Image 1 (cartoon, rainbow, N blue to C red):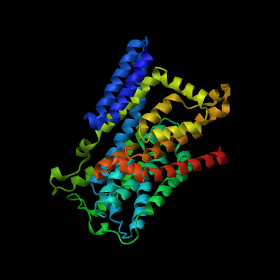
Image 2 (cartoon, rainbow, N blue to C red; image 1 turned 30 degrees about the vertical axis):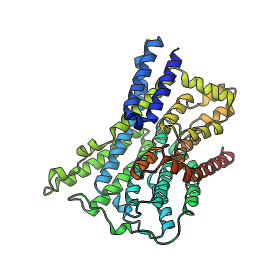
Image 3 (cartoon, one colour; image 1 turned 180 degrees about the vertical axis):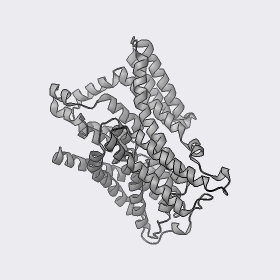
Length: 444
């Protein structure tokens, strides 16, 4: 009875999340309500005396991810508020239409490996508006930005929430993730970008970005703007190095990087006495701009999945999959298709709950050591999961945070995306999947 109720609550809650715009209720509120109901039912029906302690353990694990994201979001906000991203967008001056598409794709792919894919999409789409007037061609460029943002985030440990989760929980390591997924993710971008570029008529573009430079905040010169950009990006890249050198969790490294930027900006504004205080982009003021609804949504989702895990539901689902499918490639492929509709954070969290990281003792005691080898740290299943959940979200415009925000900014219709973009993206997804299979045959 308890199991049925918990599953029903999760399914109904997720349906409400998917239709939040029609319900006119923020998905964060739905996720938090789902979290509370699941754990309340579990506490009342499980008969376990220490449910509170189990809850606290899961909360600590989830908050590691959330604290990391708050730090990363703040660093990105500091860069943006000081005009750091304009240094990048000002240099996109090509007038050739097809060349512009490739420039946008490459810049987005690289930038989203460091920033989150939603922020990257916002920065590039806002820049796109200064180059291409509204119309079908701009929708095509915007769609390529969405694809590149999701593909770029999948191969980096800090490029997407799902890969951040896998990296912070120890399912994958930085070097292995980058080396194994960079080529498949690049292929999954190159294929649809090539297909879509053939639909653009060659010739001159509509305008030049370099002549339309966004004004910097008052008192902030170009030199300091570039310093903030370099230190911000460098601080994000420093986190994996910090984790490798100290062994401490990544959220400690992101806090160190945030502290450095915070001190720097405070010193800078203390020297700008002629600038009114209300015009100074101090970090204490920027913290108010952090997307807390997204943080609370992730908290609700992660803790809801943790409740299902504690009740043994995810382990039962894993046993069903093992007995019926018993192959990691089909399981991961299904995850990728589902991620085009269902939030990839929920999918990855559920898979992590279903399949714990296998260790040497588990392998030694397992009757199927070859299959279980896929679930060790840096095993093929975790690498496939990072690829499929991240890249698969591009097959529908609603399948990723980058897609949803671009859909809102450019008013992209779901049906238009399904007709014009999804077939090309499906080819790219399958091509990258095939590359992973070849890598697995050669190196695993």
